[in-house]
Image (tube, rainbow, N blue to C red):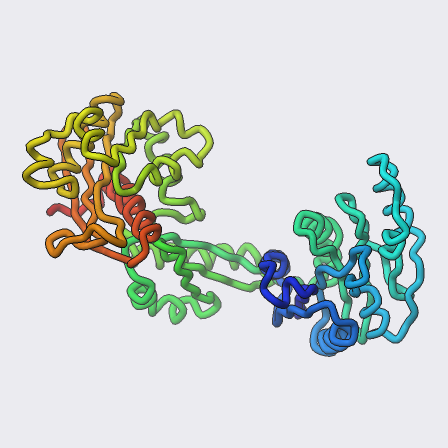
Length: 419
């Protein structure tokens, strides 16, 4: 079954508003085996909308349209759908009752303009909107079923999940196909290197589609499989994932789309261990990521953003001599920061970052993009230095924080290479 998606409105057409609805709809449709072949964006123009409705109906079995169901003059989806089908607009009693009930429940008067939202093309079927004033509708046009949903995302999502997707699953019947997706999250290789490493995967598993997504600073490997036999497809996809993981180690950190911080947190929780952070160049970014996971207080004890040298000395006990001789951006400084924060917090691990995020502050010996990471444990203290500038301060900070957390991950897993 093929489908097309249309987002309406001048704000969408001009880019003033980002169209997140189409991406969401496409993902949900593909998830139930409906192939999305095209996305459209059309402004508030009656004739253009009607023409696109007819074009979509001539190419696919299903179309989902969002927007244009409001009470104002530029909300034209109903009128354009009626023009495309060559029928009249008629007042739908069920839709009108829904709108009246919405206002009555909130103790607000219904304006005359809201009555317009109950006008549907003759023969259309009303779709209930429990969250807003704009009922949707569905209609048939040249063998295609068109679903019209509000543009407000939470209203659209509820109606899609509760009323549209069940119908599409039923329409597919025994012909339904399942779209299975697995994600391998990696860090530490370029997109091209990951692609080269997995070059033989689709030869070995020809039914599997391989896709790469750069989600800076990660590279996500996405494996897709469309199948009518879900259990057999799951088994094949599991084999493909295992094949990919084997070749990508030790760069794989998640198979369930966990963030690096969430992955490290889960490892600490499982081991009953704790972490404290001392951040300079990352400015608390790693701590923010760690605490985005509910329950992180079970393993995360303390964060110290010791940006200035005085903070490194007074709070963490970094040697003034070290700072004078080697500077703030140095592996020895990073080691002392890690030892200091571990000692202050009483944590199993102390992890520290100090570097030059840019765009200024670099030198020939320590250019922008230089990061020194320290990791202190009860047994040892180690450090690493990298120079990997991406030119933009926030990108460098994201990269630095991820490098630090990945160092801890690899230390725990035993994948950390010796110097």
